[in-house]
Length: 268
Image (tube, rainbow, N blue to C red; front, side):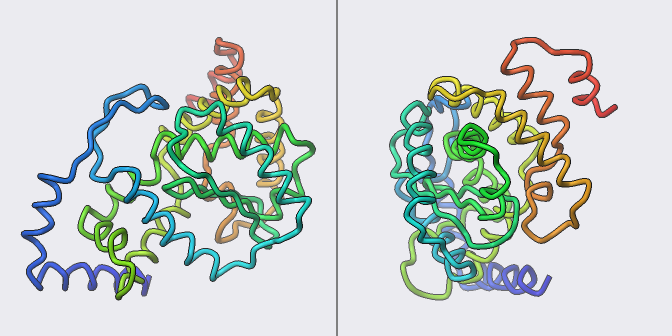
């Protein structure tokens, strides 16, 4: 709560210092309109790829100060090999993708704007095979290709705060980065989760993985949720509605909606 109050104060002060005019100038002149292959929609964003990567880099630096990075060669080569296969068939190849493993016994994964993916060691320890791990990675790549992270940051904190965080290499932008991390570790909207799940099935199929492994992993997560305590970065906190997600993935794989999955989607 303290961080949120501090950052709101930081933003308010910027407006008091006369940046309000600049804020509206950015809105009027800085928009980028393009067709997103992942979402299959024409989208208007305040930031192009270069600024998106700067934002992701700022947040990545903060995350890597908070968590220790695993440097084991075998584990890193494994996840990088899977990521390369997924990216090769994804809808967005204008980025250099990075994947790293955080040394924490937590079942979670996170993606940042600009191509950054982090897996917690606790998640890697729980998967049964590369197919399940590929499902997780494909889901996070889906968030990046659909630009869910940058859209959420824009919606949550406005163009001015992101402009400061993205363009200032030095200076007091810590508040903005802290807000970005808070937002990215909060749950995506249900719509964004479902969209990323559908994209994960698409990428898994094209990369040669069995998408049914994604269902197996989600079922494993659901079992873990029932016996585990809610922790700060737990997967079911940042990736909600597991039963509904299983239903959506099943429907995307088979092309039809089974009655059981229908009940899960409507919440029964």
